[in-house]
Length: 212
Image (cartoon, rainbow, N blue to C red):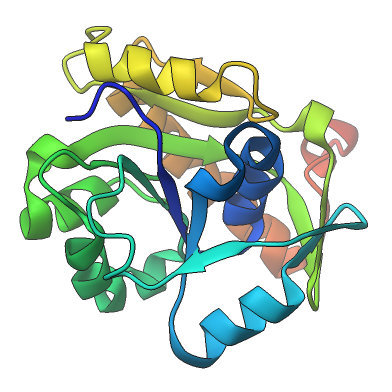
C-alpha cells in the first residue's frame, strides 16, 4: 500500500464523511475528494456541505476519476455497502488503502472479498452528530474520531502513514492496541445501548442519570 498519502477520497458525505471533510479540507485542499456521480455529483458541486454553520465547497469526482487514489474512506450507511461495492472496486488501484468507518464488524471482510484484504485497514468511528437537511452539527472537541489498527496489533508502516495523514488536521484519531476487540466492543454498545435509546427516545445520559 502507498505509505506516502497525497490524495484522499471520501465515499459518503453524511455525518462521518462531513467530519472528515471539515477536518482535512485545510490541510489537503484540492487533493481531498468526495465521490459521487450523476445528479448527486452536480448537487454536491453546487451546494457543498454546511457543517457547524460553515459552508464547505467540495472537489467531487466520479469513481472512475478517483481510480488509484492513495486512500479511500468508506463512510456509507451499512445498508448501502453492498450496492457501493462496484464503485469501491473502481476507485481502488494497486496501492490504494481502504478505511471502512461503518458500524458493525464485517465491512472490512465484505469489501476485502471484492478488492482484496491487502487493501483494508481495520477501523471504526466514534461520533455524535445531528443532520437537518443540508446542515450537519457536532461538537469537534467531544468527538473521539477515527480509531484504526492492524488485525495482528502491530504498528505497521501504513498505520504510521495514516497517523501522518491525520496529524495536524482537525480529525481526532487513536491507534488501537487491539482493533478487533474495539470493533466488537463498539458493536456491543450499539446493540445494547443505542437501540433501546431509539425505542424509548431518550439520550445517552439516561444510563447514568436514571436508577432504572
